[in-house]
Every structure is written in structure tokens, then in C-alpha cells.
Amino acid sequence: CKSNIFFLLLYASCSPLSFSLLSAPQKSGEVESPRVSMGAFSNEELSFSSNFDFASSQDLRFSKQIHDNVHGNIYIDPLYLKFIDTEQFQRLRDLKQLGVTHMVYPGAVHSRFEHSLGVYWLANEAVHKLKTHQGMELGIDHFDIQTVKLAGLLHDIGHGPFSHLFEREFLPQVCNGLDWSHEQMSVDMIDHIVDERRIDIDSGTIKRVKEMILASSKFTLTKSSREKQFLYDIVANGRNGVDVDKFDYIVRDSRACAVGCNFQFERLMETMRVLGDEICYRAKDYLTIHKLFATRADLHRTVYTHAKVKAIELMIVDALVKANDYLHISSHIEHPSQYWKLDDTILKTIETAPDPELKESRDLILRVRRRDLYQFCNEYAVPRDKIEHFKDVTAHDIVCSQKSSSETLNEEDVAVTNVRIDLTRGRHNPLESIHFFKDYESEEKFSIPDDRISHLLPSSYQDMIVRVYSKKPHLVEAISDAFENFQLKTYGIKAQVHATPEKKKRRV
Image 1 (spheres, rainbow, N blue to C red):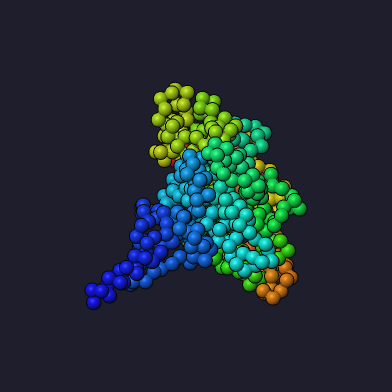
Image 2: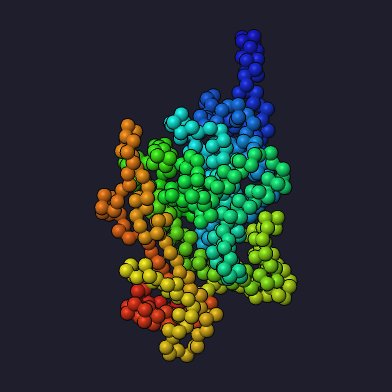
């Protein structure tokens, strides 16, 4: 009996799997290698990740394992760790994915760091699934896989503080006419990292990665100049908007904000197919794709552009603008060597600085901390037939619509946001720009027009919402009245759902 036990132990110790399990160092949340962690044992059986087929066991021995709360165990190869283990990429830990949304949805504290790892892993799975099913005919090679994964990992490395607020709200106020985007900064940051850290990677790989990151921006190459165009649609799809970037953030954001999500990207990734150098989807999955865009629009309506979230964003932008001349915040965008130092902690820098030049900014941030926010007065949805020729409403428009009031309004008392929400394709049906196939025996691809989809789906694909805020509580009534006058003057009706409650008007 003892000899049998001895031989069993000897066999186990010689097993490569057992050796790697026993020798692998462990950290909280991270396991260097192997494929499975010690916690994978259950009833004397081993449980493997569903992603086991997407990398060879040879590669996995040298990969770092990280447990993600959305995708489970993901594995990072040594090349990608060279980029992750830099101060430029680690900066993403201090950039909240949803900016100031956590001040309304407390769970929304996840970072761009988590999202970038998630997109890296989904890009890895997508390209491997295509290779598994169509690898011979598509000619997918190691170079293709490497560039798609690296583009997924680094696509957001150029993002500024507070999500899109920095790029869309702050910079236009302090840098008039500046043509800047986080995608362009991402490619500049990649060059900077490669040069500074002397990463051994060929220029052709970096060139392709940068082109993939820019694929959905205005800086993209023309489609005719790209080889294997379908690869450019995996991370940032400028053709129809279906990409793994959306797959990750829709699920991740929904979970963090506890708003629910019944969109399942796994179904699309299992059945997608390349036809004519384009990723296509089964016709029977068109409702799943529609659900992708509908869920995204719901997140914009209920989370990203929540009335309180926008109020806080308006205050943060005002604080940054007032501090810019003294702290030169906008100058950080001039070079990656300075840009990586800029993150969400800029708020703490301002509110703890004793400098008198920052007093106005400090006061605004203190108001946010104490929940003394700009007061939401009201909103209206632009009539559907007026959206096409809509012109942004300004504080000047509201002030000029004031008739009689005991309070005289100034433009600096009023804040206006013009919120555009669509299904990612403007005013058009997103399914018309996506190609489908009937079944796997068919080579024909086609789009689905409005009249061929369920009549229960919306007939309009874009909302334009105008919201007005009072920066001073005692001016809510005067601004609300001026806002109603503006609607009557512009449309002949009050387009808002209901009048501002009297109790809110008189709150001071």
C-alpha cells in the first residue's frame, strides 16, 4: 500500500501540469502561470477556462493570468506585459471609465485599465475564432493576431481625465479650433513607449496597430489602402460600429451601474464570418445586434447623460477651465512625455492646493463634494421633424428669452447641454450598414432595411435633448420661465414633458 502511494506521488511530481501548479507564484488577483490556478480544484477534478483552445500550452506557461470580473481568467503574453508594465499604461488605473458617473452610480468606479485588458482579451478571442473557422481561406497569421491584440490593449491609452469630458467639453473651451482626439494621442503614446522603453518590436507591427486604433476616427486610412480590412473592424469598427470595444464596455458598465444587460456578445462572436473582406453575421442574429445598439443608447440615456451626472460634469469643466491658466492643464496634450502625468487626480491637486489663484476652482469642487450642484431646471426633446436642422441651444438663447422677472439673468448664470443620443449610426437604422448571411452554405451577404425588421422596434434612431441648469439655486424660477419662453418662440409649443415643479423653483 505504501509503495503504491509512493509511485502515485512520484508520478504526480513528474507531471508537467502538477509541477507548474506547485511552482507557480501567486498574488492577490494575479497568478503568473500556469493555465489553471490552485483554486481550480473541485472534487478532485480540474476545471479549465473555456478559452483554453485560443492559446497553446507552450505560450501559457510564460503568460500572466489575471482574473477579470467580467471575462474571468485572461492571459497576457510577455510582449504585451512590456506595454502594461509602464507608467503610461498604469496611468489608466487612475482614469475612471465613466468619469464622474460614480458620484451618481456609486458602483461605477471601474477604470480604463480594466476595460483595456477586457478589450485585449475579446480581440484575442475574436481573431482566434475567425482563424479556427476560416483560417486557411483568410490567411490569418501570427502577425495578424499580434497586431489585433495589441490594438485592443492600447486603444484607450490616449484618453484624458474624466472619460470624454476632457476631450469634448474642456479642451474646446481653452483651445479654440484645436483638432485633437484621444485616438491620435493613443498612437503618439505608443511611439513614445516604444522609444522610451526600447521595446523590441518591428515598425511594421506598430504601424498596423496604430492604423487599427485610428480605424473608427477621422484620421483613418482609406479602406482601399488596407490589407485584410476585416481585421481593422475587430477593435474599432468604423464601418458599422460592431466591435469588441463596445462588447466590453456595454457589459462592464451595465454591471457596474447595476442597470441590467441582456445583450450577449458571445452569440455574435461564435457565429460571425468573413465574407468579401468584411465581418458578417447570421441573419437570425439581427435582433441581437439591434439589442447591442439599443443597450448602448439606454446607457447613454440613463447613465452617461443622467441629469445629475451632466450637472457634475458642467461643474468639473468650469473648475478645470478656471484652473487652466494657472496649472496649464491643456499644455499636457503637447507631448506624450507630459500627457501621461495627467489623470483624474487633477481634482485632488486643485482642491488641496493653497494657491489663491485656484480659489474659484476649489470652491466649485467643494460644492460638488457637498452636493451643492448646479440645479437642473428642465429639458425637452427636440421635435423629430426639427432634428435635421437643429442648432445647439446656448445660454445666450435662454437669457434673451427672458420676459419679466424680479431677477435679471446673465449668461454666466445659465448652463445648457445639448445631448445627442443615437444608435451609433446617426438618424439611420444601424442594421442597414451591417451585412448578414443566410447560412454557412451561402456566400451571399445582405443588409436588413427598416421595412424588413420588427415593427415593434423604433422607427426613429436619434434623440436630441436640450437641458438647462441654473448655477445659482435662487435663479431656478427665472431660468425655468425663460426656458419655456424659448421653446414657445422656437417651436410654438412647450416641448418639455412637464413644467418645472413650483417647489423646485422656490428652493434656495
